Each structure stands twice: as structure tokens, then as C-alpha cells.
Length: 279
Image (cartoon, rainbow, N blue to C red):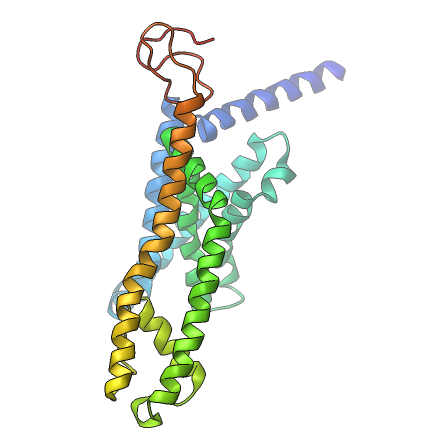
């Protein structure tokens, strides 16, 4: 009995290892093929969500769209259970961010039995696009994503102060426009005026509310010009932080003793140009 249990356990471990290589193996042919298939199915599923909201297409191909969605849902369900089997800590995967996204991606079709013809299910199915981050979370994408995350984290105080400043400007200028303009031009309340100020400040300009007085047009012109400068501020903050991080990394990164160049990664053990081992 003990030998049988050990054999079964070893066989299960081998199966789990093979599944893990296919699902998480970035450099293996099977892993690359799996990622390509998964990428295609995710994009196809989102395309089906978009087509179902087009009334003419839904009327003509409703049955085909439903069958295709069920096939995709079954594939995602099978993949979800394979991911649970492939990990040694299933609960850790189930309650992780990507684990919850994987679960959410298969729920809409099953919930359609209980909540038919609900638009919110289409929105939930569109969340499958978030799964693309898992596929793209490899190689150079990982380094770039980490670099951007660190830059945003380092700039969060400046960005918070900037957003606070924009909110104050919107409230003050919105209140001024409420006093300057009349309700006939659309400025019926201070919240409505603040909404107009935000729309104008961000250079969106819906045109549903517009000033008609000379002073109001002058203030609106000032807000439009101010908006161009405001848009550039957060971009400049993050860009400066990224450049600063790169300069620090170049300053403290060791040079190759052979070709005197710097490795592409901070934790590189070999030079990226000549292959010399780094100390």
C-alpha cells in the first residue's frame, strides 16, 4: 500500500510539473504556444463582448456568438483548474490578484443562467483584458513595468500635491464663473460650474456649457491656456523620476572589467556585450 501511494504521488507530481512547464514555461516551445493560444482567445473573447453589444450583429449571429462564448468559457474553466493543479499552494493562487481575475473571467456565462440579459455581465467579461498583463509580464516587459511602478511610487507625493492643486483651482474658478455667468448660459450652480471648469481645464471641451459674457470668455481662455501647462506636469514628474532612476543605476552599476560597459540589468552576473563574468 505504501509503495502504491508513493507511485501515485510521484505520478501526480510529474503531471503537475508538466502542467507547470506548459503554463508558466516562458522559454519552452509548449509554454510559448500556450501563451500565444491564450493571447488569441483573450482577444477573441473581448471581441465577442464588443460584437454582442451591436444590435444588428447580435440579431443575425446571436446563436453563433453564444456558442463561441461558451467554448471560450469552457477553455478558461479548464485552464483555471489546471493552474490550481500546477501550483503547490492552490489557495495562494486562488486568492491572488491574477487568480481572482481568472475566476471572474469564467463566472459571467455561468451567472447568465440566474441573471439573464444583464449588461454588467458584459463588463465583467471585458475584464479578461487584464489577463494580458500576465502574458506580457515577461522578459523586458517585467523590467519596464517595474521601472514605471518605482517611478510612480517615488512621484506619488508630488502627484498628490498636483492633484490637490488642480482640485482647488477647479473649485475657485468654478465659483468665479458661477458669479460671472448667468443661469441662462448653463451655469446654474457651483457644482455645474466646477464640472465645466474641469472639462475646460483638461482641454476636453464637451461644449454643453459655454460662457456668453466677455469676462466669462476671458476667464475661459485663461483656463484653456492653463490646462495645457497642467497636462504636462504629471508627465514631466514621472519622466524626470525615470531618468533620475536610470542615472543612479548607471552611477552605481559595476563596469565590465573586459569591455568597460555596464550590464543591462542591475543583478546581471555576466556582461551583456562580451559575456565576461562580473564580480
